[in-house]
Image 1 (spheres, helix red, strand yellow):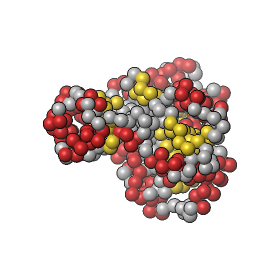
Image 2 (tube, helix red, strand yellow):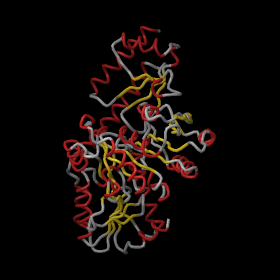
Image 3 (cartoon, helix red, strand yellow):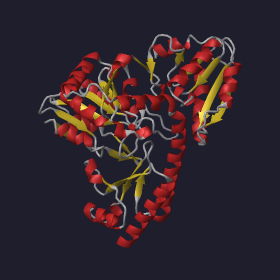
Image 4 (spheres, one colour):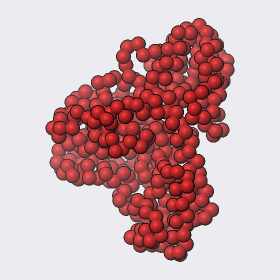
Length: 440
């Protein structure tokens, strides 16, 4: 709180402009505008003139250009999140920050209260991933993939026989990273509340003992698609930190968040939690480059980072993949106009699938995703075992991920990927409909 107030005090008197770059969703527009206006009122910034621009997926942003060209000494350009200012990459954010500074104006992110200047001191800001916090270069290290990094962290930060917590149903490769290293996997199953998964904090506390060393978090969640709220993350991280449990946070889907939701990287919860966590990310899900085997790991705690890099060196995968590294940098710097278009398409794909299933296959109950390109479907109403249902679907020409693979709570569920052309999605849904009608 003190840091936010200190940053806000740097804002000089002058005209205040709010810039909202929004999707076609009316609630998203209203939320951004409300956040900016509320911040301005709370900090006494005066009247705010709002500029709106709809995400078109193109590089032309006439309202932003008009706004930047008109800024004067003492003006403030306020945005809710810097990632909404432009999705064209890190270099574009710094270019805009430079133009604001050159005009003698101030660039303000209201979600954090941070005043942003140009990149004058060599610090790295991962704006392109929605990480508006300052990240030092040395905090970032490498891995061939997110699951490889999880395995290495389990190796580096625990001993055989130690316990590692997972919260199923969850991405099943986590399980082999734990068991394959001779550690004991402890489940804290997610619970469903108001149609979405959330953490079972009471059960989590009961399962912790002196041998519990790590918790693997999937954020956003796969397969359910949850974007964990700040309150959920704060409570989870507090329990872990209080009990000396290090948090390994798989945030590979952080870019793929739908309108009305906000991904919060675990280290941004607090400085204490930043020092007790590692964030794992890659361009692979967002930009479909998983075959290039390149990921990165953010570890603010130097002692933990040294242990991780020792494990990395031990298995001789510390040099990285040059092709994958270059592709990752190219994607993060220059791929965000494409991502804007992708997110509009993915949201429309989900809406198409939701409407189709609701109207034509009402026996399927779906969990509405807040992120990812996956939909978690409950087929228990059909009264078949998972093996019987899988055979029915395969015989009908459609293959889905079996829910039981994701651990406790997955029985009777199947995971569908809607990150594909609309025609492919429609063809798959028609096969799903036909198979279930035949089986009923």
